[in-house]
Length: 261
Length: 261
DNA sequence: CGAGGGGTTGATAGCTCTCAATCAGGGTGG
DNA sequence: CCACCCTGATTGAGAGCTATCAACCCCTCG
Image 1 (cartoon, rainbow over the protein chains, first blue to last red):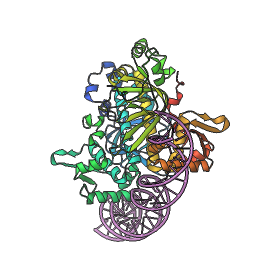
Image 2: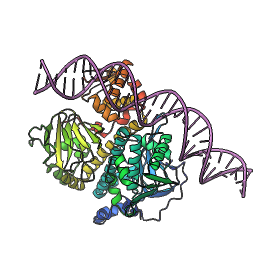
Image 3: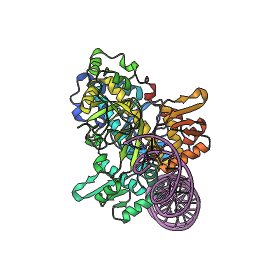
Image 4: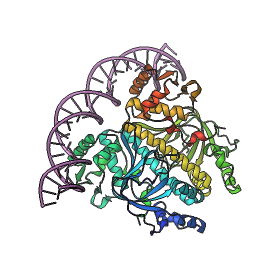
């Protein structure tokens, strides 16, 4: 029984060169100088690539840790659900994200798609063995996990010490930066925002109603503009000021990788 | 200029076998089977071991990323401070914790001691080079960072979706478990808790006054007992129930390592 | 002995949640 | 093609939780 049982998944595609998956995890600078042994070990790995519909689980919280997954395209998020049903979204993730990696026998968090996604999976044990024999990959994974931890820290600071308005501002700054929809030439940042207000609420520890009110006020103050799930930042300096954070804080390694092949 | 400038640090101790530092990062199962090459690389590293007084900085937020540090003994915490001065404590850390490791040119968080601590430091670049050539160490670091990320996720869920009382309960459950002060035989968990209520507040996103009130109520309800910085859990099941979490969720790899040498 | 940090307690204000009702848009079945 | 439904967004009113401000105590430390 795989974790895709309840999803609408398209047929696995084995024709793609599996090693291309690593282009999402490693940059050329790391990938090219590899010796033939490491190269061969990477090439010998057979990822299972699937397309998963929007709003479908990728990995279930609490399930046995069966696979690690690499997001190849689309939006998704990691979350935890409490026994009483309250949900906390831990991170929104894009192409290149590595999920399901960790210690412990079960997944400490779940992953769900926001848009339709291409996802590559590999059995957990196989990935760990690969890590142990390929230092270059291990280094990249360390950096990937490290970046993810840094974002978790930023989110914690938001949740614990920022007001609702500040949290919303910080999230917008983070997402516009991470999604690289910066349009600095026109002094405008705009982004196609497929997330619902309920997701924003679950990410920021707020009720969806309050998120709605805050977004309305930000729009009223001419800081942002929202039309049909497209968000445009009208006043980037004001937004950064309200967030109490610099946009560059959110630019991690992921943004240094080439765009999805 | 080192990051210890403002601290009362005792004289560095180079007499200790530096490789013992790795016993805090790696278990015997990993350390013993190493080939001579890796072993030699690990042994050739010269850690700088210092004793740092209580309430002193170990690493400063925003400073250049100069060193990674391994906590050898004592309590400390990682934190972020916002421009307006509000502080969020990200994690309390014990012996074996690796801090200061991450991407980016400056430290995204600071580290401060709670009690006097022994700390081993190594220049960041040197540690990274070591990682790249020692897969066993890289694996351990991945797991260490991964555990830290898992705790960050739990903390996020607390901050975003739990009430003040639930957060306090969850923190107590976490700390009693992580500090391994379980005294299951007597059906009591007790722990020497060197943290101030202000630190608890900064960790949970609460004011110190509110923390005080909550702790008082928990004591009043016979769930815990506090005497002179010693916390005793009187009703572990009730505490776990209120926390909405299982104690075992907080038991990471760190608890599987041998006690400090 | 004074100063200062941490802990405690009370009163008040304010932010955010909850509940409720309405509206808009997209997908579905007939 | 249309009615229906369901999700998500919106707006309002009220309650509740937590912050803030203030005062006081206790203890340690210089």
